[in-house]
Image (cartoon, rainbow, N blue to C red):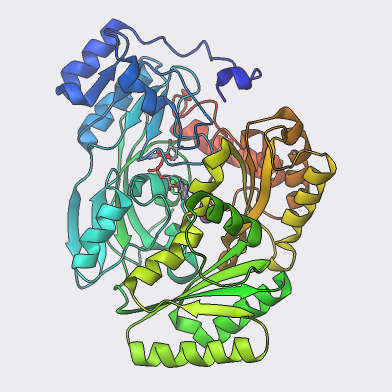
Length: 491
Ligand code: FAD
Ligand code: MLT
Ligand code: ZN
C-alpha cells in the first residue's frame, strides 16, 4: 500500500516541503552524519528505504529525511523546529508495528529513536527500571535477566521493537495475562510535545495520586501527541521455574474448558495461555518443515506456560492439572518441555506464526477482542465466506492460501489472519466491513493490541462512539494544535 492506495488521503498543503535549509539546521543540531539520513541534498534513497517501509511490506511512505536524535534535548529542539516550520513528523521505534503507523504516508520526517538506547537506572530492590525509549526490548530484558528480573512484556518482535514503541502502542504480547497491561506497569514517562515542551513525568513510584495521570495518554497514543523519550517501568522478579506444555484439543469448547481449569488449578503460576488453530500450525509446518510437537493433528492447540519460584511445587500443580485435563478428555494429547531447548521449540510453534503467514506474499490481519464464547466463530464464518466466494485454493490462481486463527486466549484476544498470495480487492470486499460489523455487533474491539495506525483509521467508529472520538480529538488538538505528529493516521 502507498498513499496511492488511499485516494481519499491527500497530502495536507499546510505542511511545508523539506528544503535544504531545513536539512542544514538538522545537520548542525544533530552533528554526526549517522544521525541524519538525507535524501534531499544528496542521493540517499537506498539508505532511506527501510525507514519508509513497514515490517509487513504493506505500507510505504516517501520520506526524504530520517533524523536520529541522541538525547531528550535534541528531540525537543527537533520537534520545536518542525512545529515552528510546519514540518510533519512520524515517530519511529523498531518499525515492527502491524498497522502502518510507524512509516510516513507522504514525505513526513521520520524521527527514529534508535540512538536513544541507554539504561538510565535500575533499582534491584523495587525492580524499577528507567531506560531510554530506543532500547530494544530483548536487550533490555537480557539486562534485567542478569539482575534476576524480567521486563513485564514479551512478544515475537522483541529482537527489533523498542520499549518506547511498546509503550506508544500499549503492546499486549504473550504474558499480559500474568503481568498485566503497560497501563499498569509503566510508572513514569518522559516525552516531548510538538512545541518542544519536555513532559518530565518519569516517576519511579507505584503510587502517585497527585492529579491527572497524564502519562496514560501517551500509552497507546501511537505517536500522535508527542515522542516518548524514556520510560520508568515496574519489573517483576524473573521466575526460577518455567514449564511449557503444548496440547491438542478436539474443539473450541474444550479449549475454553482447558483455560478455565488452567486458571483454577495453576492459578498464580499460570503465565501464558495461547491459542493456535490447525490451519495456523499447518502453515508453520509448511514453511519451517519442523517436526510437530504432537503425533496427530487436532483442530486446536494451546500452549500453556507456568512460571513460579519453586519447581517442586509448580511441577506438582502442573502434573495434577495435566492428569485432570487428560482423564476428563478435555485435552486429547499433550507434551511438556523437558529442557530449555524444548521450551524454545514449543514457543516457536506459536511465536513463529506471524512470520510464516507472510511467506506467500501478504496477510490481512485482524486483531480483535470479543467474549471468549464466540471468539473462534469469527474465524469459521470468515473462512466460510472466503470459500463461498471461491477465493481460497492450493494454487496461484486463488489469492487466499488459508484463513487462520490464533492469539492470546488468556486475554480474549484473537488474531484472525488471512494469508494471501497477493493483496486483492475481491478478498478485501469479503473481509471488510464484514469483520468490523461482526465485532461491533458483539461490542468487541477492532484492535485489541496492535493499535489503529493507518490500517484501521476508517474503522475506529466500530469500537468507539462519536462522543469518545470527539474527546480524543480534543486531546489531540490540545497537545498538537498544528497536527504535525503522525498525520493521516487514526486521528
Ligand atoms: P514502531 O513500529 O516503530 O511504531 C509503532 C507506533 O508507535 C507508530 O505509530 C509510531 O509512530 C509510534 N512510536 C514508536 N516509538 C515511539 C516513541 N518513542 N514515541 C512516540 N511514538 C512512538 N504487538 C502486540 O501488541 N502484541 C504482540 O504479541 C505482538 N507480536 C508481534 C510479533 C511480530 C513478529 C511483529 C512483527 C509484531 C508484533 N507486534 C505485537 C506488533 C509490534 O511489535 C508492537 O506494536 C510493538 O510494540 C511496536 O514497537 P516498535 O518499537 O517496533 O514501534
Ligand atoms: C502475535 O500475537 O503473534 C502478534 O500480535 C502478531 C500477530 O498478530 O501476527
Ligand atoms: Zn498478539
